[in-house]
Image (cartoon, rainbow, N blue to C red; front, side, top):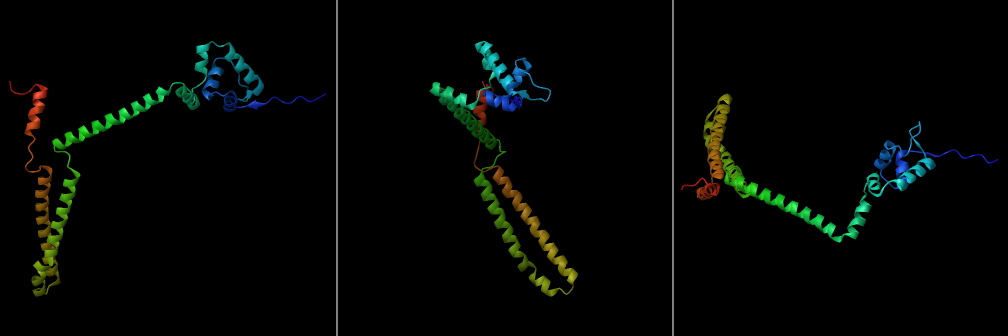
Length: 208
């Protein structure tokens, strides 16, 4: 007499793979009582496959759709049957990107008008000008204190001379930096009053 082969025990993930469904569909079938898990947490392969397929055959049409989670392959097949679906999805994607770019451009323009945004070209020019000022002031330090240092014999006094000149240079640089920064933030010759007048007219807040 031939020895009976022991029943094959498989996991839920393996059962889903053999059935061609998602793991969620297997979980749903367990909760619905259509298949049963053993004490070890696994399934009898033959029994689970048979019970699941029978429950699917008995289930009404609309109910089956809730058992199987849609896959990317099914989406591709659906687009093959509906060629315009993919184009519609692409159109929505590009429209969203376009709207985001318009919002970003509008927001940047608003910030620039309000004076809270500086153009990159203005910032670059300002930084270059500050660098030139700093270099010019530092290059003049040696010439300014050369004679004083040559006539001084006290080392401590020499240090005071150098320290005082550096402090003076830093103070001059700070004053010039502040002036340049102010000009960069409020460029001369630009008047946005007409823009504000148009905004008031649009809001109904202009003069009668």
